[in-house]
Length: 66
Image (cartoon, rainbow, N blue to C red; front, side, top):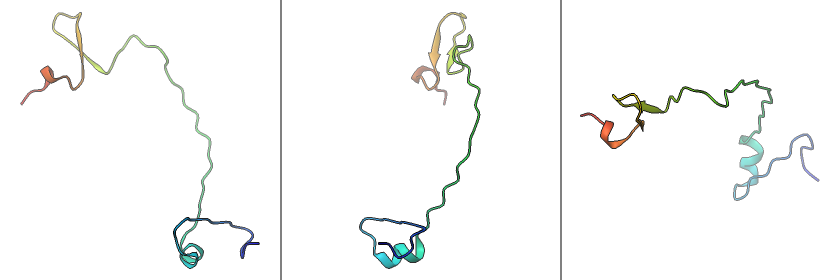
């Protein structure tokens, strides 16, 4: 059915000779283990205001300094 049975490449709208000669599919499969903290007392995406109670998000218009 295919010229090279070990690799099946399909690219819609691209000429067959370009797909055959220049396009390769390289897949690196790996496993990554990640330990995430679900809930934390530290909120590192907000700025604590001077009163120690109120906060504002990073990028808030009133925090921008020129």
